[in-house]
Length: 303
Image (cartoon, rainbow, N blue to C red; front, side, top):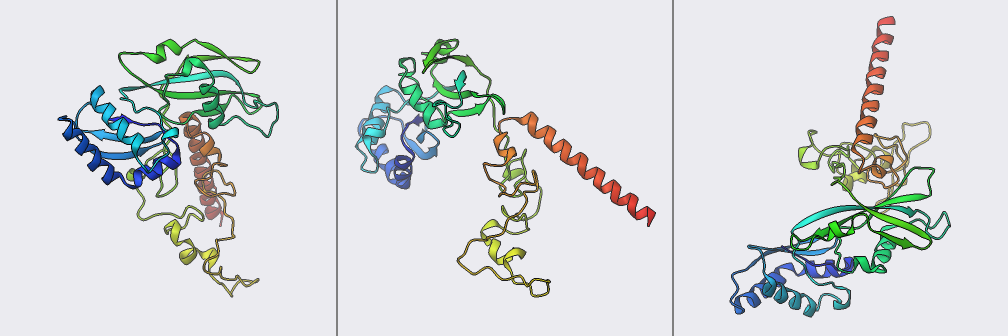
């Protein structure tokens, strides 16, 4: 496996012609009398990843690197040297201000973190496996914690050298600590509930991301009750014209917020790396559901 870090636009352009790139790279490898072959190319958050049939050596890596840089699909100035990832290391940077410019509207984001890392020489040979993750320490705090995942080679344990290292961000002194792997809580793209993946969903059919109806999201205007005309209501309900987006708002079934199921404004999305928070929230939802069912049963007995 060979990973190459490049911009999102470069990645999209490169991936479009994946089959062609696989054929060209394999031809170059055969000409060099290498027994390495490229199986396929897939997209990753950091850039394209080239999957090979065996572990590549330095000469094979150089052939692949030269081909990528000569490719007409990308801007070679925005491409870093391909590397041979062997393992991931997980780090966190503490004591970073959440409002770096002192203004509450300017929040620290992943792009800011990348720029900060580039300006510090201790990160010169470090390659990130994914975008940095910025989380506020607490709702009332002005500080944040940044999680970064890096590629780590057995011959050069870079993560070990970075742990407990301090560096400046403006007038602040930040520290790098080791961290445990923290997998995000999965959200099902079928029923839009959390804590299970799409392939393990138990419901039959699909639910709409907007109205939670039993239809696919792309067919919302055709099957969603809100977009259909209804003359039987006190105020006649007009049909949403074809080509127009649905103007109606709904409450998301998990948090009851006025947003779609995949919105980044949802508290479930904001806590997607906090499994304990999700477990407590779903336990509370289940408890409230049981109470409402029992109260309905009690009302029926009284009747």
